[in-house]
Image 1: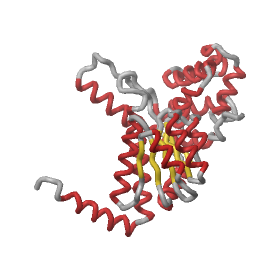
Image 2 (image 1 turned 90 degrees about the vertical axis):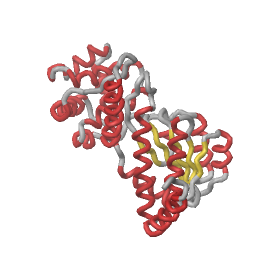
Image 3 (image 1 turned 180 degrees about the vertical axis):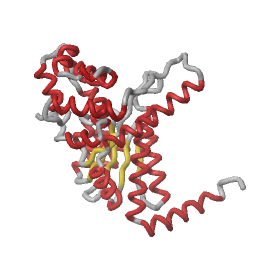
Length: 297
């Protein structure tokens, strides 16, 4: 099976940051040798331009030069020369990275600055790799669906419920489930014309995958939102939307990705509302009036 990405040379040349983000996203699925190459390549962002050589990367990673070329091809490039050119372009445009890990010894101001910077970087990186065609297909499927199932567990469940709430505001029915039995039962009742959307940072959450596979078996369109481009979730769904973030030992691997995934879903919400513009506006006004009395005046 070919595990390489489709030709992405043009994407990387237009936005060199996308190469770095793609490598970071692939990390969980790389072999030890590929991970060693990836780590060396990522380090080259902050080293001298003279180190961006095939022999240097192979030697530093402890692999053959052929393995480095194969890694470049896995990224969707023709070979190492493309990888080198894009890395050099990235250095000239972006400069050194400013990512800083949180530490338990950080003072309050540093904690806030680092957390905010990480969230901002997650949004910037997600835009760098964003597939607008996939987004448009996902929005179209959601807008035209008869029924919409949203599934996620843990932190992803919170995101699913938030999206359910947003859609309700404009009169678009959806059901968000984080109970594994409810996920499976609801998915098994979907039909062609329905949509099942699953959220999983790792792309390997069993309950989410099982629900999406059940939905697909019934003919429903499946959408996945994940931080891992070569994950099982990205592989099995009809449409995959990728977030991009770097984890932290303190906040967890998916803390920053939640920010990006919420924004992806906000964008989907706006697009669905645009498709049903007249109805959305009327329903939004009605739902807003319904909760006005719940507030203190």
